[in-house]
Image (cartoon, rainbow, N blue to C red; front, side, top):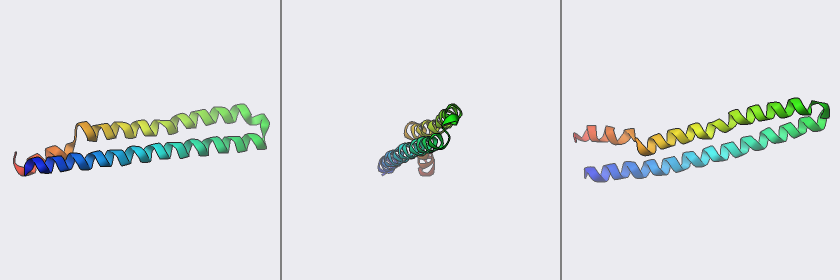
Length: 94
């Protein structure tokens, strides 16, 4: 029965990691779209501000792009060093 519990934990973790990575990818895509659209709106209003707006866009896009990589690191931690398996083994006395 213990092996079944651990298999269930790994299965639930795999599903959770998939959902987390999909949400991070979707959030990143929406963020890129918003950043680029607002930059283009600003350039359309004030074309002389283009260099400053482009610089700000790339700075904020880089900060926004780091979010999926942080999420990826947490997802890999849950996938390969799953803390729930150790907790289950401790609870079952294995």
